[in-house]
Length: 379
Ligand SMILES: C[S@@+](CC[C@H](N)C(=O)[O-])C[C@H]1O[C@@H](n2cnc3c(N)ncnc32)[C@H](O)[C@@H]1O
Image (cartoon, rainbow, N blue to C red; front, side):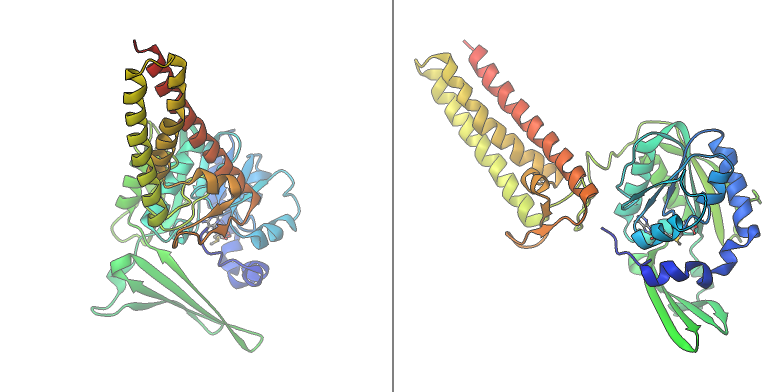
């Protein structure tokens, strides 16, 4: 799971810390833009937060569902009037799926940058595409990386300087990470917040969209559809789901050293062990098949081939998918040395893991049965 920077302290003071975001001039244009795109269909907000955009959108009659990492932000949303019609699922929007299909998904205020690896951002596009109706749209509002504004040789740039709030961005070009450092003066005390963000170029986002089966439909400088030019510091982009994804993140999870619910729960040591198990099962299946096919035993004996064949398939499938069915079933994961299991934190993630574990076990059993029945049918 990504780190949650929006804890109780930030959630409770979100509106007080960023009051300008709640001005009508910052809320009405995105709500108008998004309501127009949703056109009567349902909308999915990734990182719904305290409902700054979702609540007015829902008031305009759009059915809104949100995915949110921080339970504290959700608690703030729920404390507001008029949120009963808004559904919220607590989870990581790169991997969490909710029931139903959406005409629109959106991710505002640079929140795509909260995913700090390319793999996670790619996974986010794939996850959105899987939840959109054909022809549905994905909207992102995000800055254009401001590297041109760095003086030569410098890595730090101030982005806000007021008597009560200082903010600096610190760039690490090698990893495409800009860490934001905030310093607020609150009641005479200094409060700080530092968080990493992965900055991402419009062209890279377009490529992620293509991998997920979406194509760029519109790109604007702002929510009022001002033209996007070389001088723009941010953009509002709309991709449309037009084709099948090139990458299905759950079938082909990204290389990662992080637990991804329902997609990845083992690291290199565990993967290598399962691959070895796959090889061993294959050798045993082949040797046993050679013996049984030459022997005078009743062909029903060949059913025993199901066991090593299923074991071999399970080994290869788990290694290929970077997912241990046994761990998934038991609600644990391991990216360290053998035996260092950790518990999966929440019920939703455990449920996703169990579903994937069942799929792997089902597929392995089917391979085992197929091998055994084929062997019985042979001469
Ligand atoms: C900058 S706030 C924006 C909130 C809201 N969309 C708004 O416009 O006011 C980003 C929100 O995204 C959430 N978030 C960040 N990374 C997330 C992730 N990987 N999955 C789900 N929510 C995430 C944060 O907890 C936070 O509530």
